[in-house]
Length: 70
Image 1 (tube, rainbow, N blue to C red):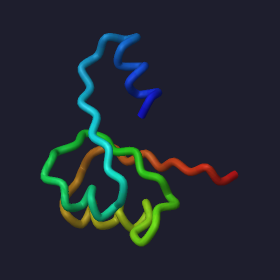
Image 2 (image 1 turned 45 degrees about the vertical axis):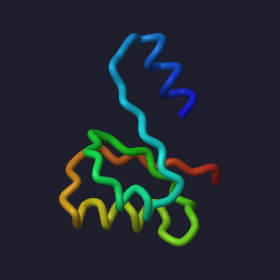
Image 3 (image 1 turned 30 degrees about the vertical axis):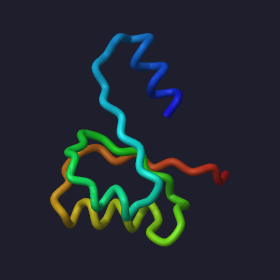
């Protein structure tokens, strides 16, 4: 989140950033996203499962997976 906010300021681009603490919260959101960053390791519904459900719901944007695992 901090890196995206910094990039937004440095490049002076219009980015609206929404942060969700779980896959369930993201799926319940009514906001439209162009791109999402998903942590692969999330409690209950992990990033992979969340992405699959997003695609099933018709999401056609970019999905970027992140993790702290090597």
